[in-house]
Image 1 (spheres, one colour):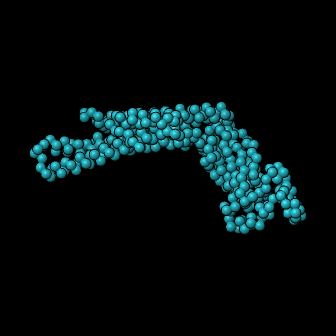
Image 2: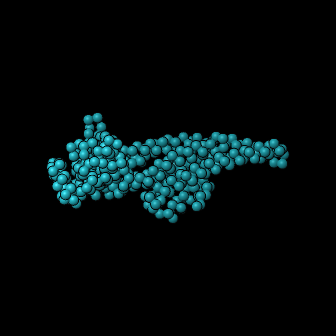
Image 3: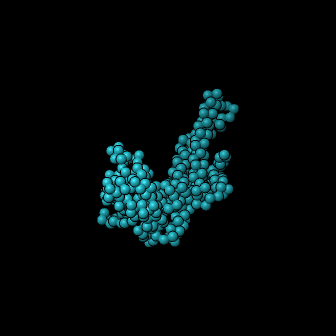
Length: 361
C-alpha cells in the first residue's frame, strides 16, 4: 500500500490540475502545472515549473515538490537561469497525484553554485546592495546597466525585495478540490485498515499451525503463503502507484508487518515441521528414558532443549515485531486512530494465541 491505495481508480475520477497562483516571493516567481502525456502508450505525468529570476544567466536553481501538509520533498530537480527565466520539469511519472494542494519550492543557494559561477556571483552587483536602499548606488547602477536596472526596479516594486545570497520562491500545484482531498484521505484510511486487518488474520492463522499433533503444518502454510503473497504484492503495487500517501507512516508500518509475517511463517514452519519438529522428537525420546538416561545423553538432552528454546525465542521475537508494526500502524502516534492504551491491548490480543507476552518498556 505504499503511496496510496486501491482507491487509485477513484482518484482518477477526481483528478484535475489547476495552474497555481504564485505567493509573494522573495527572489523567484514561479508557476507550476501538471500535465499528462499518453505518447508512450500509458499515462505519464509531468510537473512543469516556469519561473522568473533576477539572477544572472548560468545560475542554478533548486526546485522541489512537497506534499500537502508536509515539508518533506517528494521529488527534486534543478535547472539553469537563461535570460531571466528558468524552466524545470519533474517527470515523467507513472504515479497518480492524489487530490491536494502541493507546494512547489524554488531556491537559489550561493554555496551550491559551481566555482566559476560563485566567482561571477561574487561580483554580481545585484547581490552586493539593494538599489532601493542606496540612491548613489542606484544612480551608478542605472548608468552602467540601464536595461537590467529597469528589470531590477520593476521586480522590487512588485515584490518589495531585492535578490540576496539565499533566494526563495514558492507556488502551489492544486489538484482536485478540498472535498476530493478529504474523500481520498478517507478512502486511503479505509484501505489501510483493511490491510491491517488482513495482516492480523494471517497472524492468527500462523498461531494455529502445529496446535494439534495430528495436523499437517503444510496444509495450513501452503494456502497461507498464497494469501500472503497476493496481499503483499497488491499492497506494494498500489502504494507505488501514487506520488503521495496521506498516511505514509501507517502504510510503512503495515508493509513492515507483512515483511515480518513472512519471517514469522518461516520460524513457525521450522518449529512445527523442520528442525523444531526433529528436536521435539529427539527430546521426547531422551526424556522417556527417565532415570535410565546416562550422562552423555543428559548433556545431549540439555543441548537439544537449549536449541529448541532458541528457535522458540526467535519465533516469539518475530511475533512481537508483527504485533508492534500493526499496533503502530493502527494506534501509534502517527497511526490511523492514535490511541496508546488501545495499542497495548491490541498487541496483547494479537500475541495471546502464541502464548507470548508483550515486551514491557
